Amino acid sequence: MVIEMKRKILTIFPYAFLALILVPALAGACSVCVTGGDNDPTSNAFNWSVLFLMATPYTVVGSIAGWLFFKYRRAAAKPREEAAREPALHLTWNEEESGR
Amino acid sequence: MAKTSTARRIDEPLEDIERRRPGFGVGEPPPVLPQTPIGNNVWLAVLMFLGAEAMFFAGLMGAYIVFRVGAAVWPPPFQPRLPVGVTGVNTVFLLASAVTIRVALRSARRGDGTQLVRWLGLTALLGAIFLAVQGYEWIELIQFGLTVSSSVYGGLFYTLIGFHALHVFGALVWLMVVFTLARRGRYAKDRYLGVQTCAMYWTFVVALWPALYGLVYLY
Image 1 (cartoon, rainbow over the protein chains, first blue to last red):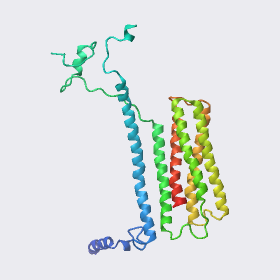
Image 2 (cartoon, rainbow over the protein chains, first blue to last red):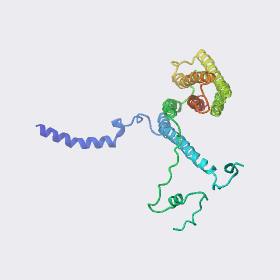
Image 3 (cartoon, each protein chain N blue to C red):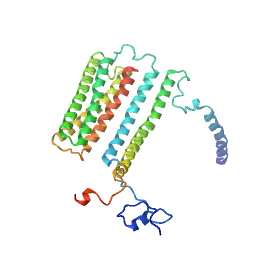
Image 4 (spheres, each protein chain N blue to C red):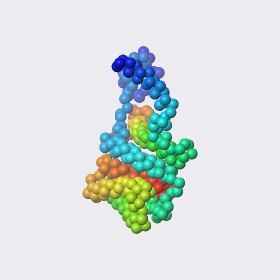
């Protein structure tokens, strides 16, 4: 009896699953499917809001990463600039060393 | 081994030149450049905090966009219009305070305590003017019937603009603390982290305002 029941459930389950995939509106799978299509102002509003909220984390993280990268490049360039200010050739004789 | 092909200082020992000569597995590893830290933990923490704040305001703006774009008529009927002109002038005051705080930070980097105090004071004054004008506007709007519970329009307005005003107030308190410490001479040329982090936060609240003004008042 129990085995029979299990078999029935297992037979129905794939069909039910397929139906849910094919008819998402009936399943209530989409939070904004209650609105009336593409031209509906509420759908449009949700779309713009979702796009804005989707773009914001990338903008925030990108800005922070960009700023850190900029700071890193500037900090890394500092020792090179200091090294570039060093004379290319140290002469054995100069006024400072000779004490004149 | 001939050593004449390598350009060298006249007084440089030959062993050093040999060590510098490139080769596979020969000589010392390349020199490691000294690492200059790009910031410190406090600086990084403030940056992360500002990221979280940006997300918070993005959430509020997202909610505003849903109601604004979805509404057939905006502002809703029988609701007062927002004072665009006065707020526009107020925006100029706030934007000017971003310039003055940068000048103050530059003064701190130079170690010029007098200029630092002066520019911090001017920034605080501009911020206080912004808040005062905002407060006056709110009183007017409430008298015209725009309250938090009057409509979605009022609720969104007071939530979005109110949270920003709260942030400006918080930044102003922080700025006053930094101003007081600067007057006591607590900052120097190599010790101005308090000014720097405060300037970061202030710049954030100022940079946020044009986006809010454009969305709530102009759109």
